[in-house]
Length: 170
Image 1 (cartoon, rainbow, N blue to C red):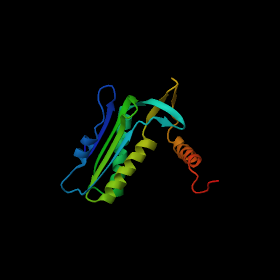
Image 2: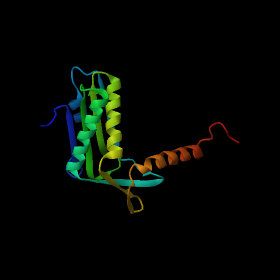
Image 3: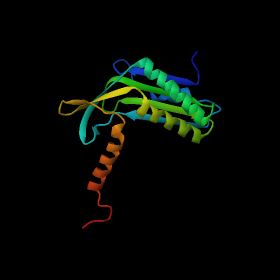
Image 4: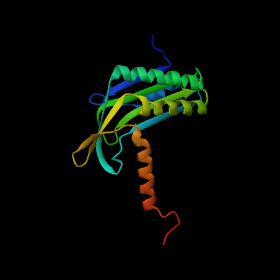
């Protein structure tokens, strides 16, 4: 039996686009004063390379089972007064396309923020979703997943530092 408080979906990018409004509508409830939503879009660069798109590959049943586990974890964290929406795209996406939508509704903002953050981080770091980045030079590579997260932050900080003198100019 499906829990009506939770909605999980995998959207084939060839047939449909993810809709943040659907997520907002799903988690809305007259008893909820807190709604948090995360929308992840395809950006045009990664680790210093120009990206033209991303292809996501996943095994739908396993992914949906993991989303269910993430919802149970969020419920343990914030309590049973929770509605959660998680949807991820699969297939080829272009720059600007929406890859993932996560929304949480709860009576108060703190719980909504925590549930939304917990769910998106679990999707990003634990779900069996593989992505292949396509680059402007025509090449493509499979991403090594969340192991790149720290490398990405370090790279972005280095690029930022190289372009800013932070008051220590010549």
